[in-house]
Amino acid sequence: MKRLSTIVLTVLVAACGSKKSGTVAAPPRAAESEQYYKALDARYNGDSRAYYDGLLELAHDDPDSRAGRKARAILQADDGLLMLAAVGSLAGAAVPSFTRYQNKAKEAEARVMLQSIYTAQSAFFAEKKRYCRTFKECGYEGQPDQKYILFMSPKEMSVAPGGDEFMLTVVAAEAREALVAANVKPRVERKKFLVAAVANLDGDEVMDVWTIDEAGNLVHVVSDLE
Image (cartoon, rainbow, N blue to C red; front, side):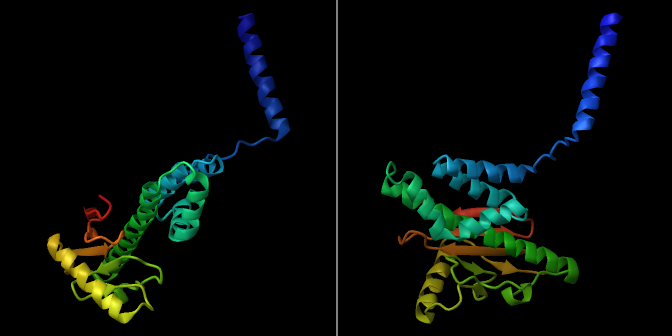
């Protein structure tokens, strides 16, 4: 009994001391924030690959969180990110590995763009009880540096604004051929849709093809990196 009293007294004294000190435990970070800081730690430790892969995973898994938006912004600043990767690992990495990292960043763009379209379509459907049939109706605008062409239908597409009109026509025709070859039919109906993203990431004959539907199913139909 005497020993139990001693233990209780010790706990009370410790609790009082903690109160007097005024120390308050910091609230735990959200999982996505922990993932972001973990990626930053990898960067500071010289592990460019872990930094890069951490940002890709965060942008894909939590694109609408604060940390996810930061990761997306870094990934979209493609050239700066690749310079970081080069500084950290170029001495020990082969050129094909560096190219693979560059193309992964471009693939991340397709995921982010299609998820943005999915969000816009969902919001439109909640208000209108149908899906928007054009990018303008969805309130979606192409980005100057986007590499993918988005298709809501064979004729309704979103491309990077300000490009050479002739080249855009040629690339759009090739992208449509890639959709036909992959048996992908982008379309918008009253209660369902299929939006596609197409790009040639490495200059060969194969084109990278992604789709997303009304259920949010993101599918990498054809990889340009294999």
